[in-house]
Image (cartoon, rainbow, N blue to C red; front, side, top):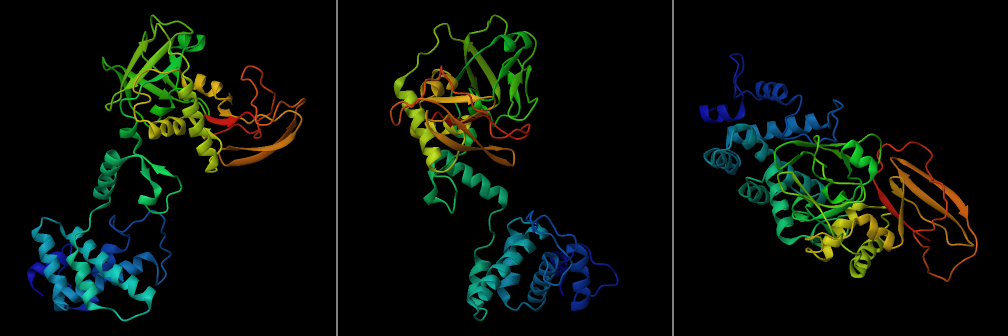
Length: 388
């Protein structure tokens, strides 16, 4: 075997090994691939040591590829390897690419129970190199940036109707929040609902470089702890407009004239909620509402609007704790369910005197209801339930 082939196939050739000996090659490959390389790991496969386990399959593929390269049969395998190396790919990438091409054709052949087609193998080799996971992810993100929201029919077997890249989709939005006494006294800002459109940010800072730390004290809670004095000049009841640039720089502006409730915006938010519920996604999170409104109008949050909490109340939705719980129609009994971490339970309530069909109770006169889950939530997020 010539030196170029040896350099490709082996990560160093020990003195005892004969590269032309299939048994020696198998031993070297078993040593290299025994634990699996990053180019093969899927994250959900566990090798149990069986003859048809992932490691055994990797080894079998590598032995076939080595034989084909050594004997140049078919010649397209070694030619493809040379082409990939000339393109700047290292040996690990080249061998992984060759393995993928062979595995693809073998899988189709076995699924369709037909003879191995050399022409299909040659075509698969000709398509190399395949993009890496990182390259595919970047390409998908770029498509999402340009075309979002993307209909699920344009992708494959997606659970939701629309797919978005949250960071770019929410870029430039302005959300508002009404401060309370606790926030002012402690120097924190509740980010669990009104500011849910910024959930994807992990690292935040002010324009002067001081850090704003997202933190949580229990399931369903999220707040921002800023540096000393970051809320100075603000008092309880003030409405602030909040923006975050792509680098995570937070801007705060006190609104001397808080934005009024806009009936069209309330209707828009309610339509988003109803669409999510129709898809079976109940309860609905604040981030889902923000993304849904942006999907219908990309500029809807380009300027300060009423806080999301106010919009929800105007739309007939009410938050209880860190979730929104459904309210019973008066004069009826209903069973409702809630999701709290991995917990799903049910409870029943009954109220009196029914209003007309389809009406909603006033947000200022809630009907008491116990949340279905009595356990302390560990992974809940703020979600919405309708008033029934």
